[in-house]
Image (cartoon, rainbow, N blue to C red; front, side, top):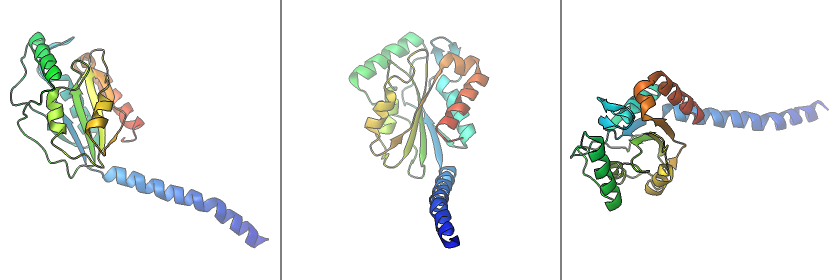
Length: 204
């Protein structure tokens, strides 16, 4: 009788123990993954916030890097966009239509990174073209990609799916969209939004 009870207990406990061990391994792996926060951002005249010294996406990128301990990298086009909002949006529209790939100043080796955040402002419902320039330089196989964007009403649009299409072999997680006006003028709220999002995707 005692032998039967022991077998039953083992039968019940073994799957639980195995699950706990596997879950622990996953959490340990997540905690040791190397993280990169890469982003494109633009200062100057921005919609809804006027002239700014630091771009909206830049502010959020720094918050994410601070919360995750990740390295940070700016996607910097060789030819800067105009400071004036209307001029910038017109160039961005032309680049989107032409599917341009503006040259960027520098690059970073992503081989040693497991988790890569990609940030950008939402321009005409898409990522700015320099972000595509950066993406197309690299092999994203087996990477975890996490998008984030700043906007004034468009959210992420379809950029998550566009990242999935461009970054073959990567696992693209749920992104974050924060209004540029919040990034500039309500940074406590923005940081809390970042923290809540990181918890949801199990990175905090």
